[in-house]
Amino acid sequence: MTANPLSAAVHWNDQGLVPAIAQDWQTGEVLMMAWMNPESLALTVAEGRAIYWSRSRQALWRKGESSGNVQLLKELRLDCDGDTLLLRVEQVGDIACHTGRRRCFYQCWQDDNWQVTDEVLKSPETLYGQPQ
Image 1: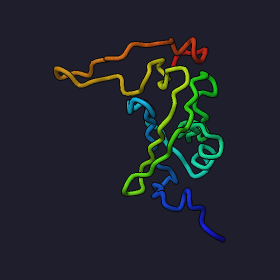
Image 2 (image 1 turned 120 degrees about the vertical axis):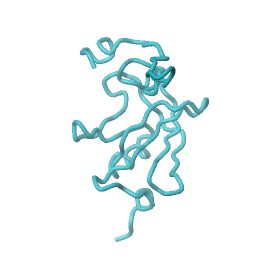
Image 3 (image 1 turned 90 degrees about the vertical axis):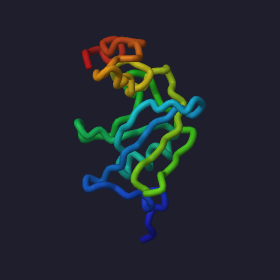
């Protein structure tokens, strides 16, 4: 049986996962980081949208399934060590973070404290029907 070339080059961790960074395909802005397993990677390529592995739910997570903020795959890259994926995506709905912000990296270390720098675009209650 021939190894799948898509996942064969990936160096999966002990849990069979690899970090996946989502980046805006036009601006280069880093939106979020999540985890993928071989199945989520294959489905991401097949469906042309970001599908991650939720460690807390132990299940596939189709980004935007409940919020509508889907990530359309524009390009997939693998780093030099083979242990991190980069998904260049079109962020539909302009919200990547479950907190209702554009990106998950909305805190900046300033003056010896973490400062929130990005506003909430839509409340988590509105996005998901419950506080996040």
